[in-house]
Image 1 (cartoon, rainbow, N blue to C red):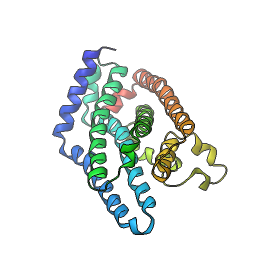
Image 2: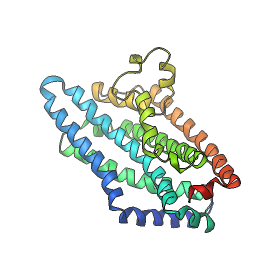
Image 3: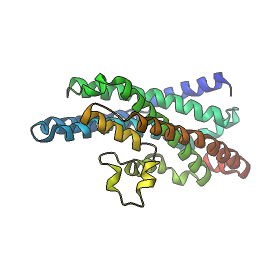
Length: 261
């Protein structure tokens, strides 16, 4: 993997992103308005059950950060597919590792920029202080979220490359079921008994559990958090071999040509 080709592709992504006004609107508009809406709900709920509203607000920050950190990478793949530019990129000598790493890096920059905006809104508009007062723990939760989202983006990319661009809708839809099974607003114990072991190994379960605990008690079970980070790391470790296998298989079978046609 050559760093100059990775940097060139990151620069290309930044140019494309800056010129695609609908992408800028989609990535920032919906998360920001969602957090503002739930922030207002949190302010309204102060007289009833303040913690409930605050939990929803904080978890929406993590949720939107997770979605953007995953979906933008996969949407870049679909943009290349729909425009046919993936052929040009591959002909130029870009390797499969350079292709995905560049997209992950550019998406990480975008998702972190969004995160700063959401955190600023939560602090200055709604006086959410706990995530800043325990910023060390918050940083670990966010890092676990980012790791899981990167892993999901790589796995989804592998699936799209294997199955074809008609499955491009998974770029923005597949993560939803993983978040549902990660129990964002409720404990895993609410799931049926047979589903609880599945939820326990979902990539975001420990993050959401930790965020709820942080809001309610100001503390987080660090053992559960480290386990959650290990699960996220395991997803990441599995995702790249799967992606490389899918990419090379698609190259041999001609699926990459179909992906860009």
